[in-house]
Amino acid sequence: MKIKQISDYLLNKYPLKNKEIWDPAGFSIKFNLSQKLTGIVTSIDLTKEVLNKAIQTNSNLIITHHPFKFEKTWKDEQLKAPYKLEILSMLKKHKISVLCLHTNYDYALEGTSFQIIKSLKLDNFAIYQEFGYEAKISFKTTTNDLISLIKNNLKLSEFRTNLSSTKLNKEISKIAFLSGSGYIGQAIELANKGYELIVTSDIKWSDWIVYDQNKINILEIPHLDEEVFAKDIFEQLKNKFNNLNIHFVKLSVPYKNI
Image (cartoon, rainbow, N blue to C red; front, top):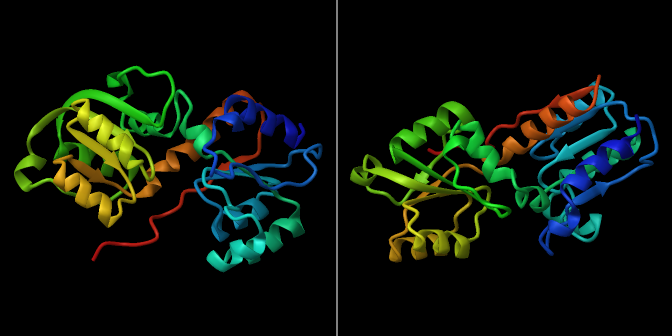
């Protein structure tokens, strides 16, 4: 099997026309796609651990959610992320291509937010939608119980919220998930539609002020929630193609609350 068979399958299912204009999804680095596929590694990001796994398993394709190259040039990339230069050198040495499926995957019918509620075993409570970044559920619970579910199923533990202790134990039933750095405009729109809790990540100070002043209930969870992408792609490819040398690399939250 050629590398191209895998990349064509994924890019047909998650076409780049669906990505955001600012998003450099696609190949961050690409070698001859007509070469024989020797192995695949999936992960949320390309780190040294992921690169080492690819080398150890003789894999010549890495599939990540977040683009390895965000800037227009590698020189600009190095200024913001110096560690990438060493990884780039090793990718070139071992001829490892890197394919990134970012907002084009997020936007899909069963994209990142849906995969989160699926991992929480709440997909049976999903409110149907065609395409978009959010996943919505109608499910009676409390925020504290939802936090326990996220801790147990996604193995995450770093949370922030603007809810009081009383509200954390109040029953809610309309919940929306915006995976990763959810757009504040979308969060406001969902709240205006009656969603009692918005679950998202990477909230900046000015957004917290907006949520506070507009009385929008927020549960912030780590951006690592998007690791469900790597698990989903791993399972999809494993089930679609026979005898693949494919590996999933789990990363850890690179910080802790103190």
